[in-house]
Image (cartoon, rainbow over all chains, first blue to last red; front, side, top):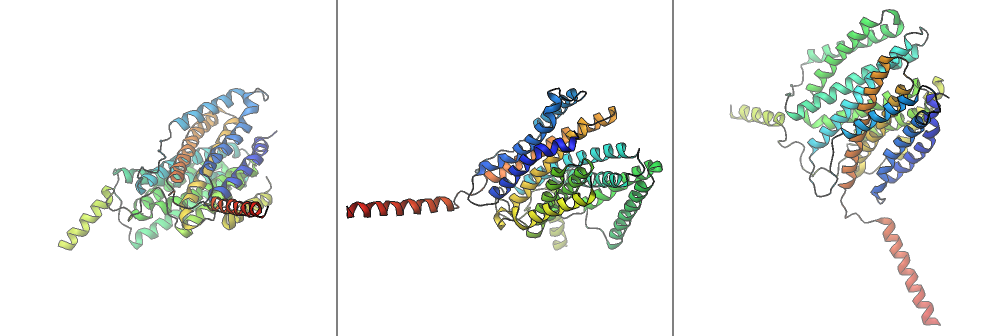
Length: 298
Length: 118
């Protein structure tokens, strides 16, 4: 039995649970207990994939299943803990920082899965669709991870935001993106000579994503992170295609839809005390304000 | 996997998400983003399946790291969602509760009326 089928078998129950939860959580009068159904759905699928291995039904997978369980436990244990209380006053910067951590983790995961997919598919010249998925995954992973990292460093105050680039700089960025696209096509079409284009693609993608993330204005950070959540959804779709799992395809589609909703309608968050975005929460904003004042004074 | 089937399934899910399941009024829209961020934790499922089917030592190491970071980001996303859901103001009236109260009142009135008649 293929791993995709194993995921999909448990996925029926998980998907039913996810749909009920979505309708419950977006309805105003329902109980908040429903949110626990989302991790439960993920756990159901994980159990469906891990249990046959851990129980020793499939030879050669048993210890891998235990390794996966250990890695899962470590990952959950290292997640930053957010307190849930109506009285505690969260600021937008905390939310953006949390989302940046999510983006970093997801980005690394997507890059690694893309590299693994590339490893497995270069042996077959005809499997261009799988290579396309792998290259797309690597690019999305680098873009998302670097954006999350730069946002996180900016919020910590380690990095200063750069001013929005001139027209020429923006043109150069588009040119770099075009080169990345060409390199990707070369890597997909000629897997035998793909190592150099792929490495160059990753380096250029890092540069491109870092420059873009540095020049984003402060008040747009959350919207940009929402866009990257949508990109993670696209990556989940490609992974579902590679692993032939319908559940991952559906979940990826839902993630993309949710991200589009948020970007179109600019939702508000309840955990943030309602006041203007970023009065003077970071050094970035403070520096900008000082600059404005000095120009006014001058 | 057949690309046609894959495209169909993705389009269906996208349509479902765009039309109904994730639409909420403005107040809940931010919650929608955190919900799908939590859903993107399903990435860890893909990482686990890559670990289980890994063929070489390199793939094993890479996929183990992927599982670790996937689990971390999924847990972080869920904790953010939990914070958001708990931060919701309590003063919104519970619509179903109000309807139930109304029903109960009518029932009482009805019972009283029937007692008076008897």
